[in-house]
Image 1 (tube, rainbow, N blue to C red):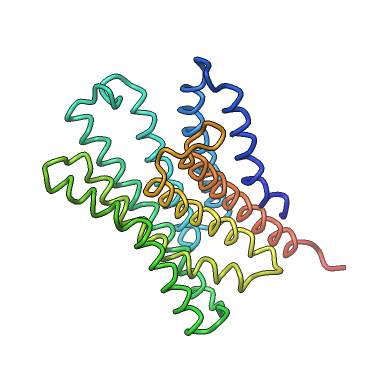
Image 2 (spheres, rainbow, N blue to C red; image 1 turned 180 degrees about the vertical axis):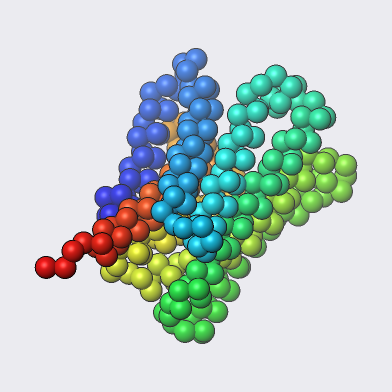
Length: 269
C-alpha cells in the first residue's frame, strides 16, 4: 500500500521527463492533450473500480460513483474540444453551451462525491482526532485558504459573466465548487489521521492528496499561470497529480475491501 500511495508522486516526474524530451517537437502538443485525457481516464477507472467493490445502496458506493461520473463528464468535455466547432479557435455558440453544461455537471457531480466521502466518518461513527475544537480549527484554516486561493478568480469570472461573457459561467461554478470542495478537505484529512496505522487509511490519504493537489492547482492558476516546470505549465503538473491520486485512491479502496473480504471468508484454523 505504501508503494501504491507513492505511485502518483513517481508518475508526475516521469510525465515531466517525457514532456521535456518532446519539447520543441511536433509531438509535444498532442502529447500534452492526450496526457490530460489519459489521466482523466485513469481517475475514472480508479473510481469505478472502487464502485465495483460495494453493494447497491452503500454510502461509499454512491460517493465513488459520483466521482466517477464527474470525471467521465469532464473527460467527455476534453474529447469534444478535439473536434472542429468545439476547439477554442473556432468554437460555435451551440458548442459553447454544450461545453459549459458539461463543465457545470462535472463540477456538481465531483462535489457530490467529495461531500459523501466527507460525511463517511459520521456514517461509520469514526471519532476524529482533536474533537470539535480541532475540527473547527482545521476547518477555518482550509476555508481561509480556499477563499484566498479561489475567491479572487471567482470574482473575476463573475464580473465577466455580468458583462455578457457566458462562457465564463462554468468558471464561476467551478470556482464556487472548488471553494466548497476544498473546505471538505478537513473531514477527509482528519478521517485519514483517525484511521492511521490501518489499511482503511490509504484511500483517505490519497483522496486528501488529490484535493490538496487541486488546491495547489488553483493557487498556481491564480498566482503564476505562466510558470513552468521542465517546460510544462505548473497547473498541468498539479492536475496530473490530482487525477492520478484519485485513480489510486479508488484502487486502494478496492484492494482494501477485497483484502477484508478474503480475511472474513477464510476458514478458521
